[in-house]
Image 1 (spheres, rainbow, N blue to C red):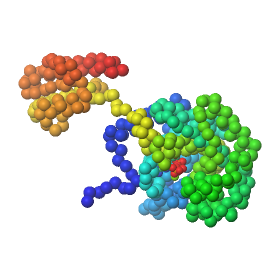
Image 2 (tube, helix red, strand yellow):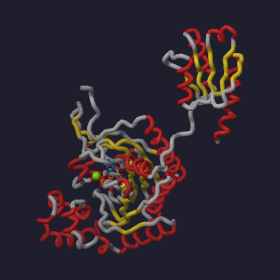
Image 3 (cartoon, protein in one colour):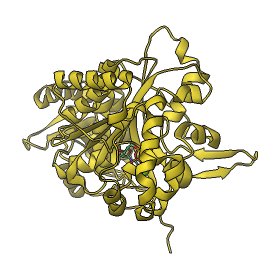
Image 4 (cartoon, rainbow, N blue to C red):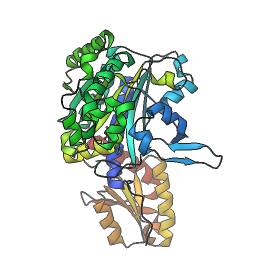
Length: 428
Ligand code: ATP
Ligand code: MG
């Protein structure tokens, strides 16, 4: 049997890769315009980073990490998310000392989680995310949500919902935790196994469980929003005012708690219903405690991550994917071995001049080379056989108009530059 790819991984084939590139280009451009700069961190890190940075009580650390021991005996993990690595770099590379503050970063790349593969859930998937480090005001939270919103607007997605909550701070969470445990204690039997384990260490997370039995048992559970301290409450209210001012619709979802330990205050998710059960295309929040947790100075921070597979799936169901307009402009059609030599030289000269051009690589007949050119919507064919070779010319055929003429081989690059320039103006 031929070797197959691993469960939960995908080949992104050329036609689809084109759509990925277009979406990535919009994302990068929007980030630059908002003043966010790219950071690229390693794909694997010491396991310890994620245990501390993502949190021991999370599903990610408990069940989903690809962890292995390398030849040096170190425990390493393929990154399951981006935030921990960005914070490590922020500390290690002393970005907190940079002149420009706050530090506004974005990243894009593959993440790895050992999950049960299903629609919208993979073992290797791709995230685009941003992190703003060194700023604690609600306006920062608003800018981050606005950035995600603006990217979706530019991509053409519609029907999105921002779900918003505040998970408080350790101060207000302590009281809520106590109230929540009092509420849950007599209902423990109705909860799933995972939630029974969460009861002691991370009861807040039970509110986020998707099991219907847990949902039912916690329907009237005390909401964290009722226990917010003054600072957390005014932060949440100010953020809502700012979102309203920017025209971003949101709804408050007190059950939204996110799986990660280091979240403080703002938590949010952006959903798009049409892509099925895995409808969260973006999740984020404030994590003021994380940088300190991994050995850096106390640093307020906020960020989000969006799942690019789900963004692409949403673009597909909403029919927002369109094929590229830019095709190779010309093809050099060669007949016979002798012509291949000059043909190849011509192709290389045209490419150096910046003209998109291709040539036959299979030694096909004139007819099938022209047919292929037609299929690829190529505008101009430069035809070269033995006879043209001997006379120092090429046949230039406009494949759309069907017109053709002979041109001296020395004139070809100049002529193509002229025609390609004109074609680009017409296309635009
Ligand atoms: P979920 O509740 O769907 O498991 P999560 O809380 O684990 O999400 P985050 O860690 O916040 O998700 O990641 C942010 C985004 O990354 C998600 O909103 C989703 O779009 C995407 N994502 C997370 N896990 C996967 C996966 N296994 N496959 C594809 N996309 C994913
Ligand atoms: Mg998950």
